[in-house]
Image 1 (cartoon, rainbow, N blue to C red):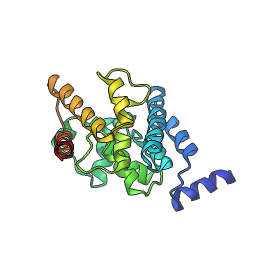
Image 2: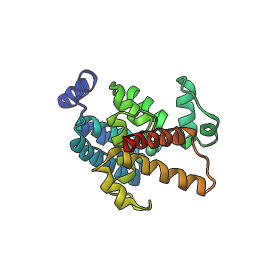
Image 3: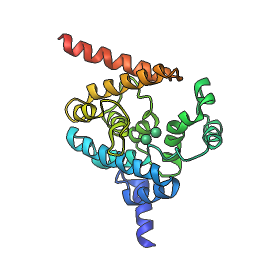
Image 4: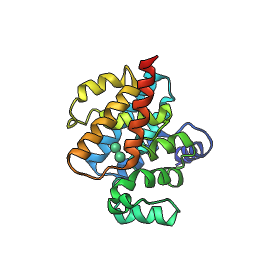
Length: 210
Ligand code: FE
Ligand code: FE
């Protein structure tokens, strides 16, 4: 009991997130399959943080919480956004599962006590990315795609290798493959996914042109 209280305090006051507690919370909030994915993203984000010199604990916290709103109902996700002034695009209104990232960032702050804006941004932007992502945002975005439980995406082996050798190229490849998959299947594409792809395609193109 005492220990739990201490952990709660540390959640408020320091960036040392009580990872064991967050893990436990996610196990309660998610079904078994989603929780397994969550642990995979935590683990992979930690490995990438080690590789690129980001905060390992922040990467773990963001990985643990990135899908914290995934096991809610669409109605719950819509209500969280509506009640808290979070904008909902037409695309999100029609596909409320897309809101799990925005709603997740809200819950990470309000329910799980995360105050670090970088972690909150990593959760918020983990499905579409955004131009000018931070190192932690890239790490969580990529970890979500390559964690050990994933096995569907084409070229996964190459992307996993790239993730540990060239973070921006891994990011661009994931975005490109995602666009191809969505557009090929005539599915709705969040314009932010394309914006992010264009931003990194240009960035990498400029680096190559030097
Ligand atoms: Fe997600
Ligand atoms: Fe995920």
